Length: 314
View 1: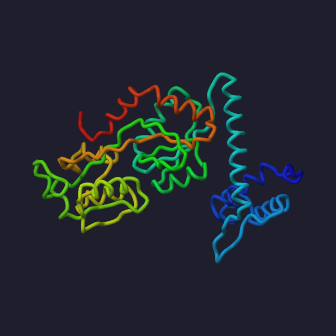
View 2: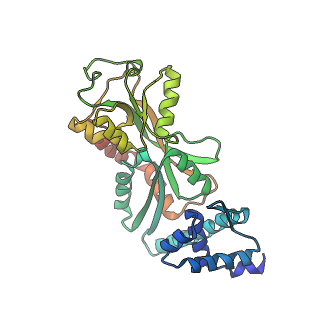
View 3: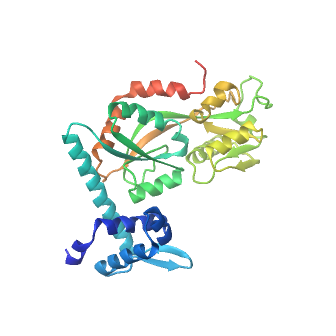
């Protein structure tokens, strides 16, 4: 090993990771309560130790060099191992402590906090670092090894991932109660075609699942309105701008209170499984290992949690 690499400090690597994540010296400085010259100095010192540039500007955008990408992977491994060591040391003291870094698809964000709360009752000193993104962003985070675990549906088959399906994700058609389709009679998916359909942005897992299902069923919507979040999609339906296919968990309150109605479409719900996913070669921290074990062994408790989110008054 080159002796110069042994002179790198953890502080330098932390600053470097912030610049990588934010693609900005000034934003990294703000995040770490430093001055921009201080950040620039640490990066220059790292570049001298490595013997190669780490960043380059093309236009006004900051890009990582190949050396930076290699250093980023190594630094994340270093910090991951230190965090794992910290958890192991606290575990030896008789309690599990530490942080669970969890990324979830946006359609799952309504349920995961309740799942973690149930887990936390067993391990009260564990804290959650939750990142909510769409499916395309989840896949990028998996590629970059950013999180301990992720929760998503439609797991890619070509990325060397390990996954555990643990919960059905029912996607249903919803409309405001005064919509012409809310007449109580059974509907076919094709009966929805004449009406405006509210869809998520490109990269959404729910949108991808629905588009594949429409293609399989030979259903085509000519009137669509794209919105960038489940909340916006839900509110647009409440406002009468169209119908939407949403995960039932995301609209449980609106269905229970009558703000929205689940349309009785014969081909729905469309079921996709939520899965907890990890990179096959990632070493799980004790906290992540405990969380995965909780999901494996507490299926009955998870089923009880789901009853709060199925969109039906009980």
